[in-house]
Image 1: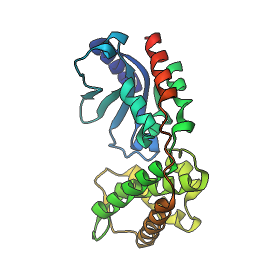
Image 2: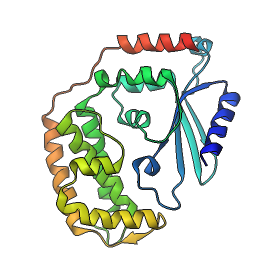
Image 3: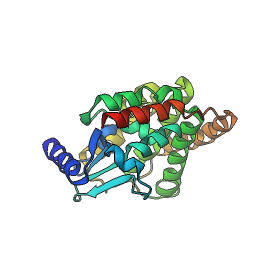
Image 4: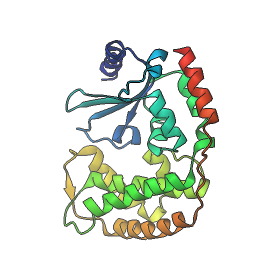
Length: 253
């Protein structure tokens, strides 16, 4: 599949007249708990010819290629990427920190160099907290049966939020790393149970709710919300370093 993905990325470059500067895996495969039937979520960052950024006619800043049920590929233009960096977008950080990389360039490293100065504890904390509470409310709370995979869409962001509060840094995206850093020891057994189901069964596998884990999640949602509200806005509103990088990267194109 890796070779198929790399060939598809080359086809996209030729068809769209772009240069891809980063291509990675996102979703459950990057997080480390893919099911046997998990699809491939490929995400990339691209640059167009410099002249395209000088035209008055507005163009799309995303490219989307839903290839089939197994493979989904889409990407963000450089200008969108850098605007999201200025906004301290957690999804952007996840793409750049994916452990599964299909293409890497020096330009991607230059963007990474600005991460620390544009990382917002408050923005990222709210991102993961809201993701967890929304998924918990929609897929787990008050359900007699739940899809096992949905627990990880609630638990992983909670562990990421805990990591952010403790370290004030961008959290790792791999579930195993977050688990070792942030999961209370008494929850290892139920999480092992869920991982076994998730990894060895189809995505639709349903189970009874895990009461012990539900209690932990509900408590964390309340605690983290109170802590998030107490944090001052720490987003870096300066554009100068991002503008400078944008110009330098376009010169390379």
